[in-house]
Length: 78
Length: 347
Ligand code: SF4
Image (cartoon, rainbow over all chains, first blue to last red; front, top):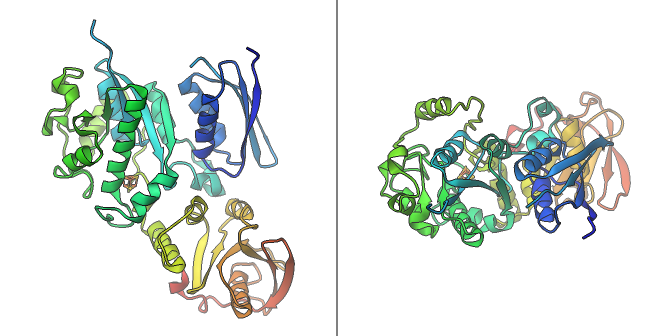
């Protein structure tokens, strides 16, 4: 199966909602798929990587600018 | 070999639930954490909004606890369902607007549903008898177990020895002898236990796990309900109660005045939902105006907004009023003096 890349718009949501939305989205994806999460709450730079570490997913990249925070993750084995 | 049992632990981010999970993990049980997001949780939010709080580590304590314990954490959005708990709590409110007993029953009930769906065996909470006046007295413990439907599948490892044995104990999934008998408000036993487990960093929220135990937050919630004539709310309403100064000079409207840049930026996101005002002749904060206002009220509100701008001591300043559709007009007003902004207007 071809890995896919999806985007999740979590702008204006405050933590932990971006984490919850990420969690719900990841449930629909398969191992190896990538998810780009776009947020405005800086707390995600802390919370999403923490969530990934405890649930076995990988953070591929984080970036920020213009009051937006973008995290790209790869879904791990479930 | 006997089957490995699985438990879900309610993780609030505080020390007690962390210890409760740890005690059961030490007995070889597979533990995962669950955390319910009601919209009122202390986690997140304010530090995301307020610049000044950004200096503090803005970690989510529930996630952090799970990571320290090395367990998975499931965060569940219960914002909608929680409304019926808060709006009409069967067992009433605590000191402020905290419906702790109903809240506990609700959360344990959700955890019960979760263990059924995920094939787990029992539920763990960090409750300690006598710790909280409303929800954690010895007489309330059976109420939570019974009304949540969890019954004897609810294990409180911190005080289990003072309570009747539960199924995990009776079936030998956990050894009752290795559970505890903590009571009362002293934190010493927990701190000692944390030391024994090598846990030296933990959060100890003073009031409780949510904003509803906060006097000022509760007053704003009551004010909101009174002004709208019913107890309903949306997530945006309860978020906005955490931000800015809330000033209600008249029953039909209130102002939400940003206290600093981070709040101003957050309030910007609501300009399509509210009339907003800012001082355009001098630096000053953005304010949202909530309610139905006459032309006279708008003028009055503008004088309040002017009070919080740098031109507060001028005879006249410009206040720009932005409608929800983005159209703007500017009026000239005399800022209210300090004495004219009455204390009782502050919600
Ligand atoms: S403090 Fe808040 S979250 Fe905690 S039990 Fe009470 S109402 Fe529920």
